[in-house]
Image (cartoon, rainbow, N blue to C red; front, side, top):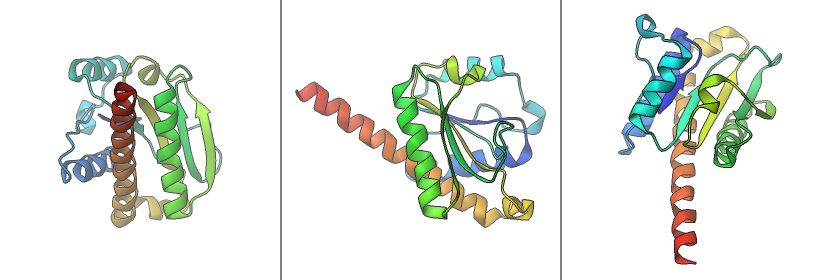
Length: 168
């Protein structure tokens, strides 16, 4: 499940691109909200996530107020080790493939991320300067493709490690 956070047309567009990239390879993906008219509260979005029971949840935003420079940051809930690995994988992929500034991996306690039981991460490929770069559709699609590839890799690795544990 992809959660564009906060309600912002740019975040929604990026989330839709990620969903499209995932769907082209047969991965089912849903958004927590679909239009600016639907931008709902955290409680609504968390309830929707619980109802859909996703295997992975990725929150995505081009802006995080705690960050003060351009770059990529990954956030995770400290009790969710899989989420930490997912956040690291997505952050590292964006840093390496787009040569973006690495703003690190951080613990996060935003309501949606602490209320879920699947692996979950909050990725901020953002504060892009100049803003015209952010609005560039091809750049947004490139970011979405990298995030989608990271999600697929994480899921594949998770399934493989689960099978290894069962076989042991």
